[in-house]
Length: 345
Image 1 (spheres, helix red, strand yellow):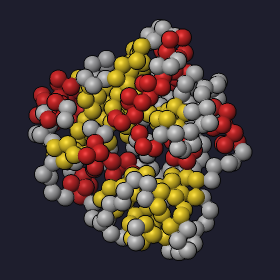
Image 2: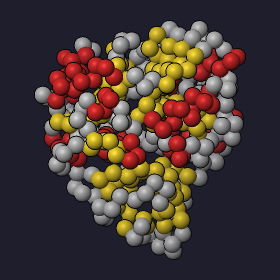
Image 3: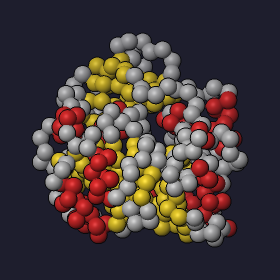
Image 4: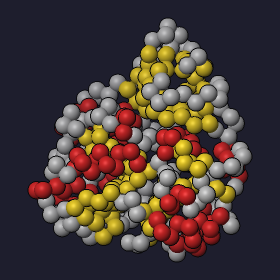
């Protein structure tokens, strides 16, 4: 366990889970403000005079849009268009970018990008010295404003300075993510704990599910096209930028309508958490897709994100003998150009 997670009093379990002895945590997050160590997320920094041009050739984002205010989603692909990682892109300084992604992908992505780094004046740093805290609830914006002296941004934007950053993520309740030096966590956590209740990071991941937001992990790399996790509907792909690795395949899939699988939300009639990759089947026991992530909701039922066939299924649907009910996504399955998401009119 990392020292900064220990400082919060959490217990770290398998699969980057952290837990507290807080009863009914998902339900608590409906009515009060809660906080959690985001142990499942990690940070990779890209620094140097050529950092922007280096990233521009590797990532689906228009890197210039990351201007210190807009912090767009992005992804890194193989030449065949399959994602190696998806991330959020921050600009920390003129030649300093920060990538936020699943913790298990920080090292693999760094190793992949280092193949191209010798051709640029750029350095890659896996930031084990940084910590990520999440706050959920209507008081979260006020708490971050008072504690970190920033005006909380709107979703997919950033605020702060080189020492700490505050990001807003979408969800059914206000959600703010704070990135700060690990050696400052104990002091910040103690102050926040007087105003918010510590909960498992599964609560944050539940809100990701409810927001229709999937973060790939190391077991899922090189598996999905970006559109299969609705990345273009979240503004995670610029179709107006130049070439990047995998761009031709990603663009062709979009303009020719060749995406036959999509990320979908669903609920199970039961409290048994399925394993990642578990099969979803129709009435004829035909496989329709697989689980990306799953968490228990405030009512003791399992909510999931799954990559599934877009064909009309034969009902009823099931997963490990539990009935599956499809839920609406909180966004339309339409392309959102990140160029329209900036802070300036």
